[in-house]
Image (cartoon, rainbow, N blue to C red):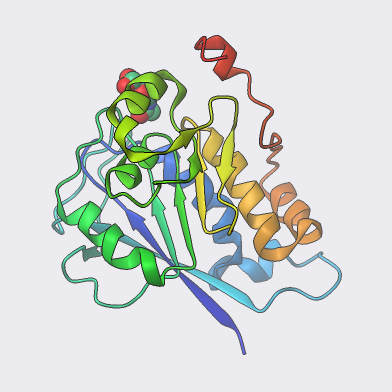
Length: 223
Ligand SMILES: *[C@@H]1O[C@H](CO)[C@@H](O)[C@H](O)[C@H]1NC(C)=O
């Protein structure tokens, strides 16, 4: 029986599109409409795994991102009653999403299999307390201010990292914007194994960097 992983994509005004669109481009290969074409030449057994995305916002009004066209959400946070398997939290320049967004994340977190954040999305997650006692990373140009704002929360912020995953493999946090692609690559390997992971990355010609292969910590003088 095919297992479908339902992904909740958390949108809000002034979201950075690449934060979620990058990972979606890669993970979306496993969605029903793409997998047959994308994985046609792949040998071996394909995982019986399907991925579906739902785009949420606090209202159904178009969401204005930092760049690019407006986005049309398909569900409000308040109307989302089902449990999602994966919660994807992108970031933005000044993350202050309407309260419905962090409240949704708090409601969903205990039952979710995975929580993925990119860029300052980890600050949204941190404020809910869900990163307390854990290791995480974030947008490097915002690193110090994120550290300062969350210093009472007992989070170990890792500066030299493209992405960080918690020991139980549940919470995956990515560094700034494009690092979301590296995070998605690592997450995909975890999900389907490195062999199929390579095949899927090759389909979109994505070369990923290792978890700690990060030049931006030094650039931003964090190490
Ligand atoms: C990263 O953080 C900096 C500092 O807060 C901010 O200026 C920048 O817009 C953020 N980048 C993104 C893509 O959100």
